[in-house]
Image 1 (tube, helix red, strand yellow):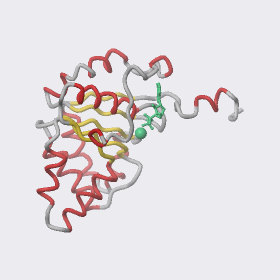
Image 2 (cartoon, protein in one colour):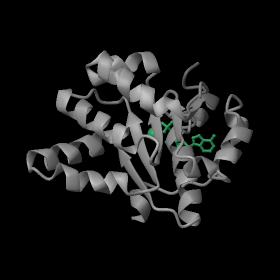
Image 3 (tube, rainbow, N blue to C red):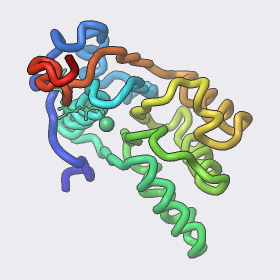
Image 4 (cartoon, rainbow, N blue to C red):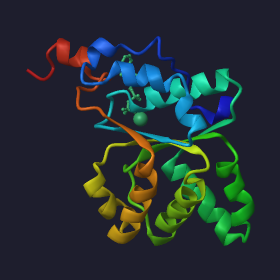
Amino acid sequence: KLAHLPYRRTLQEFDFSFQPGIDERLIRELAGLTFIGRQENVLFLGPPGVGKTHLAIALAMEAIGQGLPVYFVSLAQLVNDLRKAYEENRLDKRMRVYLRPRLLIVDEVGYLPLDPLAANLFFQLVSARYEKGSMILTSNKSFGEWGELMGDPVLATAVLDRLLHHCHVVNIRGNSYRLKDKVKTGIYS
Ligand code: ADP
Ligand code: MG
């Protein structure tokens, strides 16, 4: 699969009128990919279905179109993979898979809490990419909830400190696109 993308979505397919809270100009600017040259990160925050993964994939496809190495992984996959490598004494080698791409997308930060080893491995990755390579992360959790997510507020602060130092944060507060037709047909009324 292309850069391990779970599916393909483009910016053209994104209906900005459905999500008026999103700064379309910022998204279009990000699609110019200068953030990758500056080793900046992008964080898409918001509840399920608002288009976080869609936008992350759309930016990934722009980068792929420019010939840049891109890798997509969910946080759950990432920490499971690194945990296995750690247990088999090949963490450094495996870590390279996630350090090599110019753009690493880590999807779904927050759906599953991290145990201490997983939180530590995530911190190691974020530290190693800090000011070296861009990441796009998506999360349903606000920053205040990352301490609980990582089971360690000090480690969460250290992760956020590095991620947010050079970062574009896109807060999406709208309705779920997945439920839009159901809302229209009135299953909630
Ligand atoms: P999230 O990652 O925020 O949970 P997704 O990005 O997976 O949500 O979006 C859910 C589905 O709805 C996907 O198929 C996505 O392409 C579509 N979608 C979400 N928002 C929009 C939008 N504004 N315009 C077009 N499609 C959208
Ligand atoms: Mg998603």
